Amino acid sequence: MYIVILAGGSGTRFWPVSRAARPKQLISVTDGPTMLQRTVERILPLKPKRVLVITNRLQAAETERQLAGYRASVPVDVIAEPVGRNTAPAVGLAATIIAAHDPEGVMVVLPADHYIRDDEGLRQSLQLAANSARNGWLMTLGIVPTSPETGYGYLEADMSLRGLGPFPVTRFVEKPDRATALAYLEAGTYFWNSGMFVWRADTILSEIGRYMPELAAQLERMTFGDVWDLADLTAQIADIYAAIAGQSIDYGVMEQSDRVQMVPADIGWSDVGSWSALPEVTELDAEGTVVANCSRYVNVDSSGCIVSGNGHVVATVGVHDLIVVATGDAVLVCPKDRAQDVKKGVEQLAAQGLETYW
Image (tube, rainbow, N blue to C red; front, top):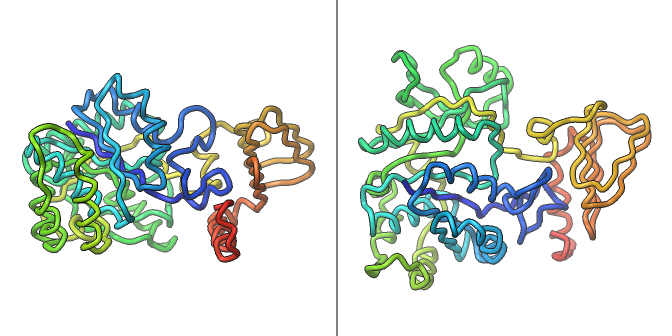
């Protein structure tokens, strides 16, 4: 089994802790290891043959630094895309590299910036998916929904078969409105689209060839030596990325293929899409406040806040449901229900030419 971690996102909704060169996956939004490190740690018990991390040039050095300590346990390759082209080229690139050495190798594709409470449950779901992937299926994990969430895409599965799965996926659907999300929750046949996949390298390359022939034609140009050495691929990757368009693997392949199956996963999953998601993934104090990275927090008549202090002493007085985030050079204060708009602040910084701060 090979692990492919997609780690090239920007994570602007976690500004000011996340920046262009240090996005969400490269930070710890609470305490302890970064999200990328946690992703690696939770899959090490699967004893993968290799871990391939797809990132970009701006983040490659920090990614290498954070993963250096894991190379004693598993070979780790960091591949820097010259430009972002969404997930289909990243998946295709990883599959092409793996297939050159192990065509029927099973590859697990994971985002680097998701929270999972039940690590063992994830590993069991991935093993179940891998069993079907070995028979040529494109597998995905469908997260058992716990609420009528409007911020996630969904997939619908044929649940007429009994047991734990896998189940055939009948369709993928975009982010719904609340009424539709409620109907999905009540139906019991809809699951959150996790963006986690399992398939054989040759299987996904065959499906890319079927549904994304232009991308396949470029990937087929790659040449490899006899040893697993990716240093010589930099020029080839640059040429390929200059010639391809961006596309997600969901839209490019998964939504069209007739070989998609799903394993239900009830694993305490969250994509931690903004500061307001932290109460889902960390403990609250007695006043319902998340406190992270503070040397001391002083609370006077405040409740329901999210406070990240970058090692500072932080005090809140008589405020409720606020996000307060301090770093060495910036401070964010906003209502929790405006957390999705933090990216607008980053856009304003960019428009004003304040590159140092984003």
